[in-house]
Length: 93
Image (cartoon, rainbow, N blue to C red; front, side):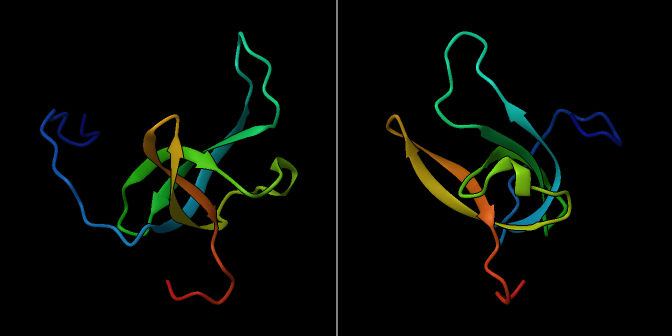
């Protein structure tokens, strides 16, 4: 739902796959033990859209808001999902 006009209409927006961490948590599965900490991030893409996903390749102790991230795609149980990693230093934005 649009927070401004409350419309339920939606559209796609092309994206570079780059953004920043807006917020994050360490998630723990309620009924199954996690082997690794799972960092769930709310990413604000450079285009202004926010997306919930996982952050991979970094321990949660090193995660901070406003860190630059970039998308990667991972096969999770046969489904390709967008995941994020910290952006390569010096990479164009």
